[in-house]
Length: 237
Ligand SMILES: Nc1ncnc2c1ncn2[C@@H]1O[C@H](COP(=O)(O)OP(=O)(O)OP(=O)(O)O)[C@@H](O)[C@H]1O
Ligand SMILES: [Mg+2]
Image (tube, rainbow, N blue to C red):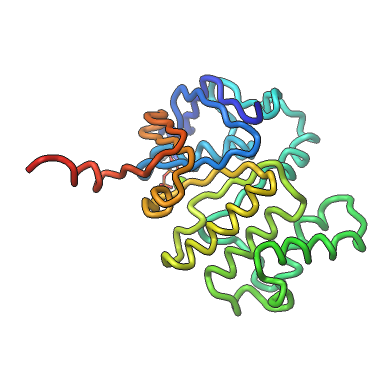
């Protein structure tokens, strides 16, 4: 089993509950949507996997290892195999596309001459090879998100976490991004994506885990979004 949450509770110092007694597992190669209203715990779930957060109670297991117990010198290895992308891309504005993608590898021990071919391959995979020498400010939102995906997958991570990756994009561009994420998933990377986009979830029919107030309230193998609007719509009267 790639990922296992065992009775995971996260209470923030403020007293807010991020997750409450969550039990679930995710297999290698899965594509999972995390849905639920604002504050449900989606980002908390993802951050527990990068060890940005440590559970208050319970265990987060990655390939059978409790990642909350990692020694400090093991955390960089975790962060290389579990990568995250965000709604707002978080690119370095003063660096070229190529250098933004290469940056993730420069902090590893890889020899520089091995880095460029890997960067090229990652940019090819997201369809941005021709923009390698441009700066983020010269790109559209969709293109910037592709750069952030290239940066995340350049070292061939085991897991890609995507926190509302299409949150700032129009529908057409969102579908382009989904195509890229599905391509990456097909190559073998496990993808977990939080989203509020019902059209995407309903269009793809992948596994859907729904959170509410920190608890898993639904886990469907080929799920739909089933947002409030839809539930209201089927109510009589
Ligand atoms: N850094 C923090 N400090 C204190 N409370 C937090 C923090 N981050 C999240 N929370 C609280 O934890 C709960 C879950 O938040 P989380 O960000 O995981 O929700 P979410 O499902 O990602 O929401 P959204 O759809 O708005 O992104 C909320 O009640 C939130 O206020
Ligand atoms: Mg969130």
